[in-house]
Length: 335
Image (cartoon, rainbow, N blue to C red; front, side, top):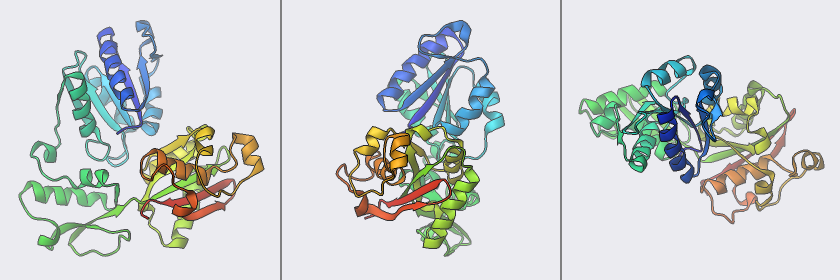
């Protein structure tokens, strides 16, 4: 479910439980970073000299964070970096003995609740889920949107729908008061409180020079989508080559669009099939002649959104476009 996970332990017992968690997460295919105080000399764990400094970046780049220890440590640690329930990573707390798994941030959209249930099952713990809709077994529109790869447009409308459902009131076509509409063009508003869910059927591949800002990248992507009359909410992921994995502009762009930033090594990009627009300079620099087109296809194939033998031109909506220090390509998942 989550591609990148950071695990934090603060005692010898916490590191033992954390090591068990790491094994579970890695079996699921995730990349894991583990942090513990240097005094513990934990084998395979990075020394944790400043929790705040580590969290500042990990809250931005990681899909999920797992704290093994007191919930207070996690709450105080993440507090300065919490932004939105729709963009923050999943955050879980596990007690040192590994008896309870508690999601404390991004339970629905971030997938913390589902992660907690899976992790608890694997380590023999009990998941403690506190969100209202989960506790009463009521339909959750934000969970539904995440499972169906749909973007939520009007974030503030979630509370109206959830509130109505928790009160036992109908939503959707049964009442004019509130409901959700699944559409690629979030304009029509049939309800007093309309929540638009936009199917995320596009993957955007991007190549860029070092140092290009998130604002430049956002404007570049936004302008291209505006020209095509496409909603940015349709983007399922941003993709690029792995040497750009921590390129700040691209990371912040994905964060702003509230989608994952997926990167792949040059050898994986070279395996992709299609007629790609090549550049000798790019090949000499990063080992592959085209980043934007190949990475878009690679993401779609590796994530299981398209079959293994897919060719780029069969799913291409927008071939390679060049900007100032940037290239962009858009691939569709809906054909």
